[in-house]
Figure (tube, each protein chain N blue to C red):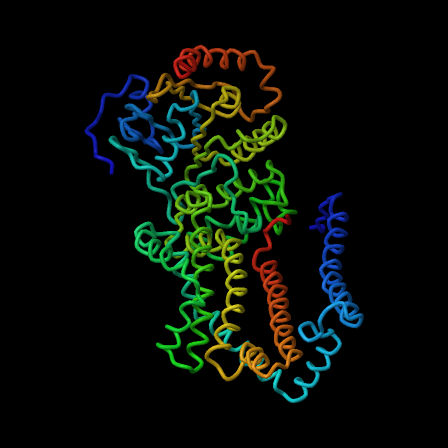
Length: 267
Length: 273
């Protein structure tokens, strides 16, 4: 059998546009940094609040050398990952089941709708009360934040699956598990990935908040203690690390999405 | 659920057919209500093995509902639907749906293999059946592509390959070509004829197109507009193998089409009023 070549005249243009997009997404933050550096050196901005990126970088090197930065980053990442799975896995399962089963949806939907609008940061005191100052309270905060967007999107994802696909499943005698595996899960996957991305972002916000109040380690703690000692550069180092984590997370999740959903059409 | 109904009164033609070999599909005094709406009203049909049976009728006449009942996707309100038992290891029926029904998240190959996988056919059987049917439907080169990379006509071919590869005793086809443009429709009709004439499965084919019905069918059932009843059943004496374009020049083809239109005319008008 000869190899297939599918002719597509738009393909080259699309690849060029994609490359342009990815260059722009790297260039724009660099431009911002350059403008910031220039403004700080020219005293256009108050360097007590907005120290030049170059001084932040030297603070970053200092705290990296002392091991402080890596330790704090590692512990934050660990909490983030554990919380993500602790919240994400049950959310995924419950969300899909809610999408498939009407009665379960009827039971769980009002509970989710009622608790979803509560700002997650507002329940931090309660979480600290229940789980104490140890690791579990931080992990739980992330888990709660991750739970909602994944569960809600998984349900929506299953519900938007075209009914004809379920008819095909029935007509080819797909069992309950097979319907889940071959139709509900892949059909809802694009929505689920959106929920995962939202949840990961929310998890990052919540871990920073949780570490500011109830922790002696982590990037949130580092930022908070920098404020208490007025070492503004270090504060920026913490913020920078969180931004980097968020950025890498987004890139990673986008790659994961491409790998998991090869059928998704480019928009 | 279906109430078993005692033997209803068969028309003479039906009685004549019943005298021959046991039918593959027997529908007796079928009623289907959607709430107060009567979709199917006392339909009785027998379809012999190896028949290409076409049901034609105005839109909303319940023909799709009838097919969905045969395919186990709809419950009957009253009456009986019997399909003769399939041979060992073969499914009763496979369905080709109207419009896009192949899974966007599976490659052409996985889509075509779906029925076989769901009934846990041995790997070797899946392998040979899928490659055979992708070959027959001209899709072998596209096996690893996803549906969004295919044209509408190719997607519908995948749907046909999926149904045939499952090796069912009966094929149920619900206006499979209605969403296609005229050229693709003609090509796929010809391909379906070629594929079907090779192994003569029992087919129940729904369409609103009289031309399509005459082109493909051995027998054509004309249905009345809502509620759906059997208006008449017509034999199509055109010999096989048939060629779609040559058929259209055959004077008998025109006569049959005209005859069916005569039956349908009132129904279409009734459906509009």
